[in-house]
Image (cartoon, rainbow, N blue to C red; front, top):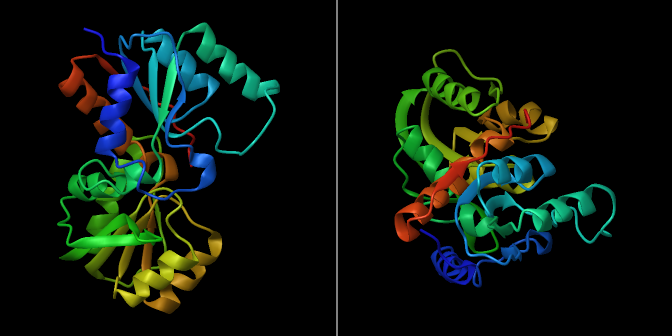
Length: 258
């Protein structure tokens, strides 16, 4: 089966509420590169790169669904590696659809929500607000922080990452947790965690100072890997497109180690 890029785009734009959710200008959510089509097969990847484009083409896909798109580094001339990426897209008649915060914030397909589901954590509210949009999730529990870290570390390892944990007390238990995928540890998220009474914060990555300050704020931070924590959303959307349009979906795994 095939589907038109226009039909898929309209479906994803509505599903992810792309027009309403604010994001960083360089995200350029939605179709970033069109093609002659139709869509025969979709591939999902965390990032656009020459590597993921080649892998998608080798899998027979001509639509690449990503979290971090072509214009992440801002306006740049079509030279060097940027030209090489665009040329690969044209040569393979491959379209690109990107979804950044609209995917993070989604109640069903959001990266943080899916990670919480994977860890069997019950979500009770939003976290990591960008303007009025919650990009993460939070909830209550009563479990060993050590056991939680072990579960996160196993997940991270299976997705090409290596989780680490900031200072934790002996026999510590996690009773209030929050998750923000990607670059989730920063000034605003740490302040929000403290204000919400969070004792364990799970993120993709964060600056060194966050691990230094965490114990002084009665907070434990689990860094699960930027790449690993953002694999879930695009893969779930790719599977959803198969269910909706009947087109094959291929997972493109290209871990960065971060």
